[in-house]
Amino acid sequence: MQRRDYLKYGGAVGLAAGLAGCLNRLPFFEGPPEDDDRTTDEYTPPELESSPLDRYGNVVNLVDAGGDPSGRETINDVLQRVVEDDTAVVFPDGRYKLDQFELESVSNFAFVAADGATPTFVPNHPAHELEDNLFIRLEGISDFLFEGFEFDYTADGFGGSIHIIADGDFTVRDIRVRGKMPDEERPNNPAMFRFEVLDRQSSALVERLIARDGGHEGGNAVGVYVGSAHAGSMTFRDCVIENFPNNGLYASSPGRPEESINGADGIVHVEGGLFKNNNIANVRIGTTGSTVRGATIVVNEVPPSPPGALNARGLRLRGKSDQLVEDCLIYIGKEAGEGFGALVLHSDTGRATIRNTTIRVDRDDTYAIHALDPDSSAGPFGSTFENVRIVGSAGFGHAVSINGRDGTTFKGCEVNQTGRERNGFRFENSNGCKLTDSVIKVTGEAVETVNSSLSTVNLTIELP
Image (tube, rainbow, N blue to C red; front, side, top):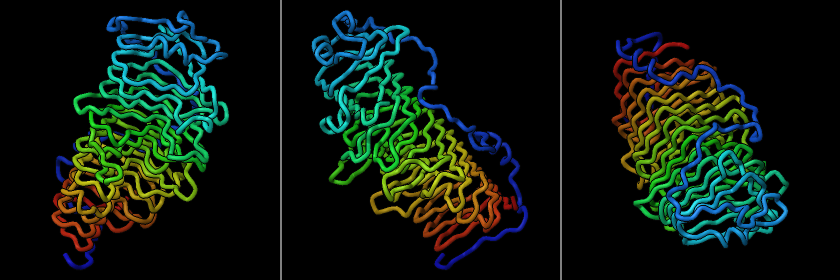
């Protein structure tokens, strides 16, 4: 269509018999998540058995080897002496002071907590004395296990980035950071954690990584960054990332084709977890075949942000295509601050599949779904939304905005937005789109098309 068209409906126009059953299978998210004011100190992970150590030829108790568990003396020299291939270093309870620590080209080794212990790493120097913001750098490693530690960043200005850039497999499990990342006036957008798997046949698991205290207002810290050279497979399982000013989980760089980035297109899977009050995006993926399943994403207050750079998005897809979002809950509260939307498809993202997901938006004039006009490199462009439920009290603007994305399909979906003058769908410069077996309950216009073609089947339009 080459003219501005509106589809206006008053009352119900028919509901497919099977639609109610489809909607009943959606995750239930009628109200906002319970307020959760716990600090990192109050978070208690489940009691779990530690990983077996019989795969290692050498098992070294760090204290027996001369490491100081009192936090008075640094342990760098002891670590450098005992770490070698086929070795597990076991840490009893204690506080272990570290200078900047770097390790390269070691395989089949581990840093693990002793049974029942929660050892803590403490930076010996403030961040401004660390080269390139680095606290720990492990590079060229493989078959590495890092399990059961805390990091104490509670002293003002103390902390730094932890990099694991692996040639082969690695596992990071049950790691907790207490305190904020020192990110004020620090260069290069420091990431609390940076992970990469350089070998396409290798994989990494990051499980139960807890970082709730984030960064500072006016700072620029990233929670977890997956570097552009990541080429293998990486899974984030049941992680908790909160209050970072420059993305919570930033995992889209491997999907960026720009010459300056040259992403390796390594896959990233997000399984479960809580991502809360992070600026720019709480979760951000962008490589071929990457997935987000069962995650809870919440913005219920204004997140910390760099000066003039507030953008309180929920989930952002940026780069490549064929990503999957499934069984997720996304919430944008009244006090979230300005943002481009709860679920945003960037202009360099092609098609994606979003299903069995509930999005609640209570902030006025904020998109639940915002698919930006794509650039020429992103195609094909038509995404599929199935059993997606949009609820909340947001007023004004549109719940769903689809721009320049031919072939976009919505099936078995519901939009129920109760705020004043809230509109439903807007399709612009998008042909061959479909809206079927769905329900729209808004106070404004249900569906708007601008230079677009849209077919509707079994569509119900009601007042909320």
